[in-house]
Image (cartoon, rainbow over all chains, first blue to last red; front, side, top):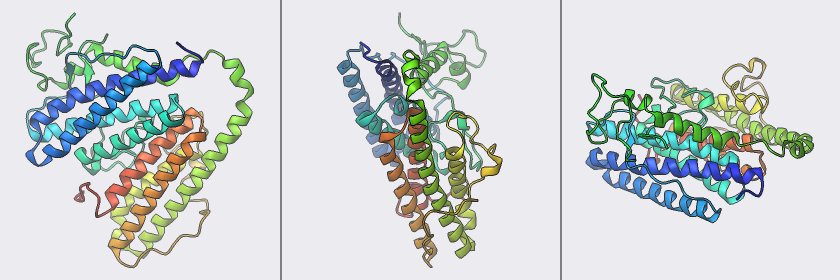
Length: 169
Length: 207
């Protein structure tokens, strides 16, 4: 199901975004369980937003004749969540990881799909700062090749994936 | 076939039990998980693709390269204008200089990235010695910063937001790598706007 090379690359990038949204939905489940009460509402809104993106990506994959990647039953988290502050940190990591996936999706797509991916990238960058605070703001959201933070104001974040299928497959 | 929560090698001394609930996993267990590598592989595949039909695309390269350069120049001009606004605001409000510094630094880094050759993906960080942000005159006259500090910050927030929008609008005609960069810059502009704007939902207590 590839008319041109671009279609194959686009499909791969969309599947990657779908896999990342699966992980984010899972991760936000953990976040929601630990999040401070004051943030509950916004955490839930973010959770719903990621579910919506996941569903849309799944439809897109099907529309392209692909088989949408499935969610893993569980995902390894990048660090222990044992208190509310960790929950927000995890949420920030989840969002930062998504920005990289959506940046690649921008490159692999055109038109509406690209615009959508760019919006998702922006949402992720904004939420990363919403949860992680100003020090979570990086100069180049989603572009790990530029390093974690140019405006080195303290806490650089690892660029690695935040939630990963426990056993890749 | 069931995927395991930890995925890491067994027998880690401080590692969580395999059956421990999600959320109690150590950083190490993720890093050592095979899943991490798989996910990275997926990303790489999405990013690079397979260069079949490379030959056909080669013919368009000149035209594309020209269009790309023009796009980057336009984006850089807009970035230079924003940089000039940061400088004008810091000059008019010395008390804000510290607040503005990180935002200005990001704007300068963006400018470096836009002025770096498209192929030099890694270079953006300070390697473009002769092209440090700020040595080119802004294309547009710099508006006078508002006299009130809060209003001055709000004006910059608005400028960041405007730049975010124009970069998103420029995505349509951009080649993949430049589109990726522009989308990232647009996201960064939106974040800066949020951080600068008093009305934004983001925290305003960095110091």
